Amino acid sequence: MSPYLLSLLGGMLIGLSVALFMLLNGRVAGISGIVAGLFRKPDERLAANLLFVAGLLAGPLLYRAWFDGWPVFRPQGGLLLFAVAGLLVGFGSRLGSGCTSGHGVAGLARFSPRSMAAVATFLATAIATVFVMGLFSGRIG
Amino acid sequence: MMIAFRLAAALVLGAIFGFGLAISGMLDPTRVRGFLDIAGDWDPSLGFVLAGAVIVAMLGRLIQLRLSHPLFADRFQLPEKTRIDGRLIAGSAIFGIGWGMAGLCPGPAVADLVLGAPVVLVFVPAMLIGMVLHDRLAASSSC
Image (cartoon, rainbow over all chains, first blue to last red):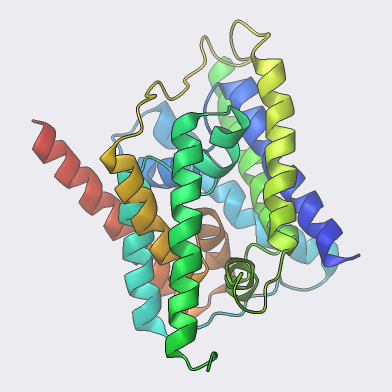
């Protein structure tokens, strides 16, 4: 199957998960909120967050069962870069009340002005970051 | 009884989300960074992920507007804030820098743990530290 069609289908499944989490449980399926919510006191929401994360972890296993191979994973950069990036992603997603799922999917689907501002901002800084790193890696020039 | 439905839904919907990520290409940092590399060798495919996800989520939103409450719960718990403030913009800007550096955001990073790559085993704990650090600072500054 073409990568574009698989990307579209994968996106539609992500959208289905977000839609049903709202229609069934009444909650926004924002992954940063769900993951940060693993550190709350034991209650129903903690259990739901743990189960959602367990389901996420099952994703690559389901892929392997279906396609007879693991999803492609090609990191660029070393451990230090990923450590710093992880800190920024964790801190930033909490300060900004969401990430690519909560703002990017659920928020845009609700036409939330806050989410539109968030998506425009993180797309801009992510694109700028990739551009600047490209300059220093000597890809341009 | 409803609590059992809510918890089962969380597991199944997490798995649908994770499988969707896996077939979409979002688990691959090189694909993600290629999508962000609009000035270079741009890979537009992940735009289809966002479009597909938002369109289906919008259909869900249209149904939700006609419901008085979720099927398995008493009420919808939607974000109530509407003001675009400095925290939203600063947080999103910081998030975007990290996303661009690694090509990983929280959902794919968690799902990628299964693949066992050392960079992910470093990224996810660092992300959790960043989250907890923020939440501790926010809790102490609002008291």
